[in-house]
Image 1 (cartoon, one colour):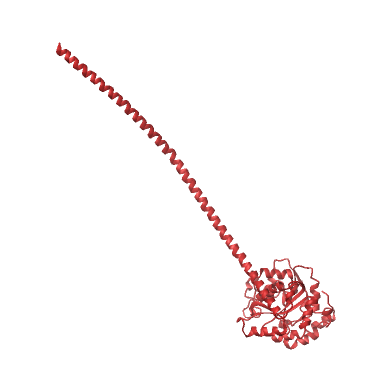
Image 2 (tube, rainbow, N blue to C red):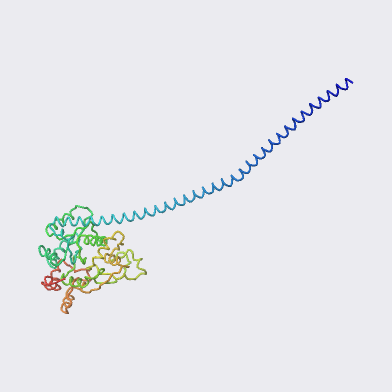
Length: 397
């Protein structure tokens, strides 16, 4: 019995012990399950965040890329704008420099006139009728003297003409290629005697006549406030009263270009007189130039002289200065006045025209593009083609 009870007791303890172990295992299983559930839940959250974070990061990177691209495009546009503005600034600067150079040339010319005892100091404050620039060269001293002894008043008579009639007359010349050389000194000595030069900031040369013309008008319009500015060659005879009467009839016109209008052939053969290197610009061979005033004498109004002055740095120069001048007015609202009294021949042409009541304003020989042998013949032409000796005194402009 004892053994049986003992066995039962032992079995009971064993059973009891086995029950305790089973209970403990059950608790461990529940804890493990909870731990697994928590782990799965955390993994799920982590995975879900991963899925949603990647598109957001991709979108963010895409936005950043787009913003960077826009910034680069904006920067590129700004750079192009800056380049364009820089080019404009350079062009404007070139224009300002050109205007400063023109004003400097005018100031130097005024200074020389003041030093020579000229009355140019008052020129900037009063109104003049016309400024006549006589185109001359270093080698033309005798031509200048022939003009001085005929149709160009001298000394006090010239100053009186400026004061009472508003007519300014100057020989126009630049400088030699060797500044301060013997040629320049000769002109300076001549200026000390006569005081009738307008010196330009220009290097003399036959192929530079177009440039000289631009510089002359630019300097003259800066020095003298006049209604008209005239260019004439030093081998042409001029009747001042008649020329003034012609121009007075156009005084109210703002943009007028007066002269003997012509349209000569464009010469494309190298070596001939008046050869045009840019003949191809005028179309087919044998074509003619546009209408322009012959170069012996022409007049332009103040507005046109000012236009040349302000745009001289961009005005194209053809080899022939009269063609150049005509080309500068193409496309502008300019009235071309063709007056044959400005291009009369010498005797007998000028004589019979005067007898018919049409006194010539300028006379020369077409075959010589001026008065042939003008040094020897100017006095003769003045006698045969000149107006009445009192015409200028009695003229009212």
